[in-house]
Image 1 (cartoon, helix red, strand yellow):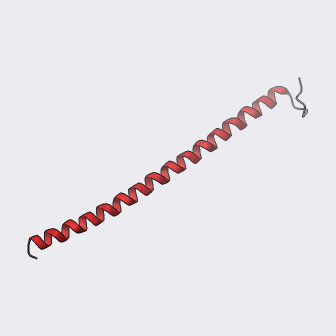
Image 2 (cartoon, helix red, strand yellow; image 1 turned 120 degrees about the vertical axis):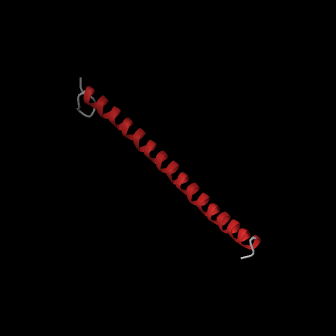
Image 3 (cartoon, helix red, strand yellow; image 1 turned 90 degrees about the vertical axis):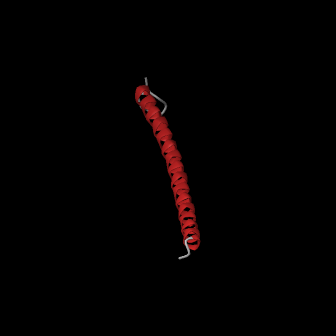
Length: 67
């Protein structure tokens, strides 16, 4: 049996399934990229807070010890 574009129906169905799977893979990849970027942003924010807190604690300890 032939499809309207002249290809065998089995081939047309196979191509359609491949296209659907490719679209799903691309969408999933975009989702992973978004999650990775959010995680990286969170790590850098946490690093900044930790650095600021460490500096503050160090300065307070220095003042308390009379240095």
